[in-house]
Length: 73
Image (cartoon, rainbow, N blue to C red; front, top):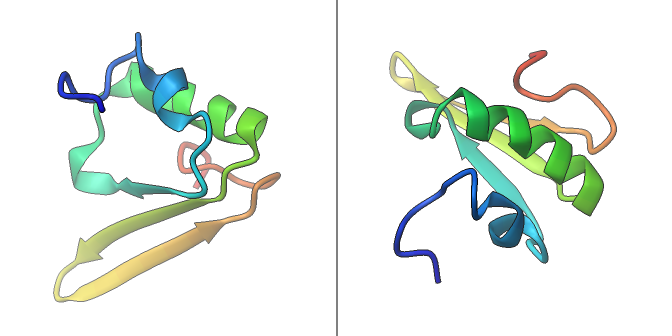
């Protein structure tokens, strides 16, 4: 649906109607996308999970919809 990838110009359309968002730390699309994502997730009431690997152990953070977003974490 989005062959051009995640862009500032299509982020709202990409997230509208999503059931969940999984943010993968090592493939963030830059500060503009990251800043917009938190506001859109709140507006559309989409739960967020942040995923990353540190050393040999995985990390999965479930962010509360009205709580701390990755930029604050």
